[in-house]
Length: 554
Ligand code: ADP
Ligand code: MG
Image 1 (tube, rainbow, N blue to C red):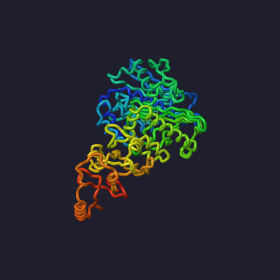
Image 2: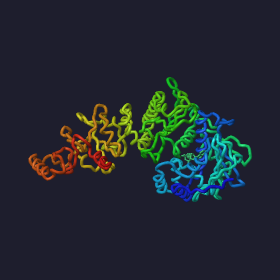
Image 3: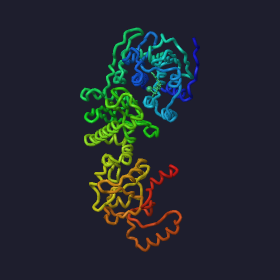
Image 4: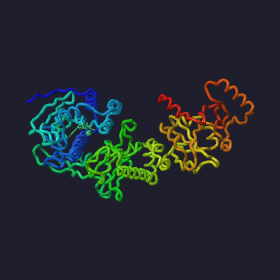
């Protein structure tokens, strides 16, 4: 018999484990959801590999997850008959962190208040290591489907782990068995009542049946049936069930802001279940972040990399399940498939329609969604030409007329001044800064509304959106602001009474003094209180965009 090989954890794993064990998470239950989600993933991977290699299923085609309680031994066992892991896969998967951005993640967790950190664990996919929150030792026995060897990985979650071969008779016929030797204060995880409650709360809709055995060797009873929730009819699904499913698929613990579930029949047949999260996922602006819609073919998980949604909808989580693609669909086929292109279009339409409906039926809920994801929806204004006007209609803004609320572009146009050809906007870093801007004075005095834009995406879409209901967008920090045709509603201590000759003399003086710094000096209607302000030329970039581009080193 070979002796166990010892390995040390990669530095990031060690740090992560330390963090997990030493922070007092309010909610340790999450470890179970993470283990079950890994077990279910392993079953889905096996189903997928078995399409090409049916022999992998041997004489045991149905996947399952079995939890075994061992109160006397102070242990909890989680076993699946999924794909399993080879020795090398174990070392890779359970000793390192493959994902990029780990450091950023950990810094974020360390900066987060205790208790809230747990929310991030599932999202980041460092799920497995969370079992060290409750276990003083973890043994993982695994046998890869089709392999004739089995391996034991064992660790106390401190510095390292050992890996040793074990007799196949001590391993599952296929798949993985994880044994948690529970810490003294975590022995309640051998209570049937506790485990059942947690499974119902967190994992009730995992698409693999879950069973529970009350003690080692006892017969396992079914806890959940593993029916895919999305195949059920909407009327048979409660909102708790949707939320539970959403939490499983998103790794978030909040309530979804919007649930879109439909079955398309006709040209293509597919089901889609999509959620708009209630809060922002932390990696929304990570450039590596991929879309989060999973593709299933006839209930078999194929990939989460099928780009089922455009980039700007990357906050939406969910899945599409279709019977119209072959199970052995390849990456290239996915890229080029006309069926998927049509499904994509259908799904995006339904999601946007659902957001539109929310805006009509529940303004408060819609505004909350807008505050959470509006900046992404605005990316769509320049990315998704086809839906541009729809997305502009959804957009809400702070303006000089909005007060604490929001205004839509149609509100703006409804109240537009006679003869006003442009929708005026001002872009900057914060609302306070914008409200104090001298550039606004002339507009305010004449009661002309100005959009106050503070998202970094704003500089881009405004220069890209040519018009809205016949009006173009115009930056008030750019070019001349011809406001003479609009009469002032309130009189400021206006400089307009000053003799034009004096103004001209001052302009000549300023032009000479600032010759190297500005391209021109002009008299303007846009100021009331302030003496001068900077504007960008008519052609070229607006001032805020100029700043962004300078910041990006352009
Ligand atoms: P993630 O699930 O996001 O990949 P985890 O930390 O939860 O991250 O799991 C790490 C990896 O360990 C998984 O990607 C998988 O390769 C492997 N793994 C964990 N549990 C199992 C299991 N029950 N069966 C097979 N592989 C597993
Ligand atoms: Mg996982």
